[in-house]
Image (cartoon, rainbow, N blue to C red):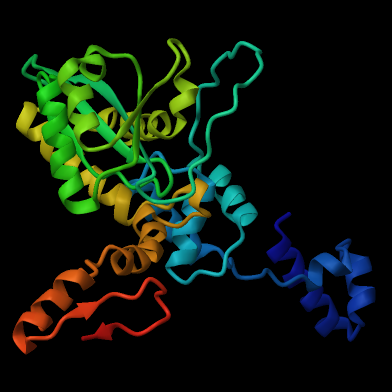
Length: 312
């Protein structure tokens, strides 16, 4: 019998025979705790709606990154609670586990500043009209910002350097570039271009993509969240969608390696000091020469910088 009807029977027996609730429950055969239980309102209704909405917009985000997005929206929520709800709502992202060979990891030089090192690589795909697509991806190893992504049917070494020039016009040149051993990165043109700008080239060992882990991670996210999630009509359509994804990656996507801050947020804290350090300091000798010619005086620069400039 339904609990609701049992409760009605208990109430009827209490009123009809003027019995206590305990005695009435015993006669009807209902446990007192069940009879007195009051259902609590679901506290996760709004959170479930927000999770489902975020999961629709970002279907490849796991519970930790969804938690970061909710917290950025002002929600006080624990990642364990989000994980339980994701499992309940069937929003969990399934990952294919790769079989990895056991071996001794080789240490990779750590970076400690923006523009200290950029990682570069290529990603391939195909458009709906049959065109083969190739994307040159660039990532700052420290801030994880992607300065540029070039999309075309073919990308040679000269196009690689043009892309780097375009990225450097906004972000500045890196101290070194880490790449694999592709012909575009081994060409004389690319090596000459880097040498003229004082950029060191680091080629990883063949078959060791983990030595360029930052760009491999970026390419994995690009593949999973953009290339596999979209259908490209042609090269122009692919370029437009990939550029939109790169902008979202830099500005809005929380990054686990940056304590779930976006790459743009992480890099912003270094922009002000970098701009202050990059200001042009006027040449003191030229200033003194101009002043001397204007006043018919001869200035001598002291060897000790703490002393004053002499006038004769």
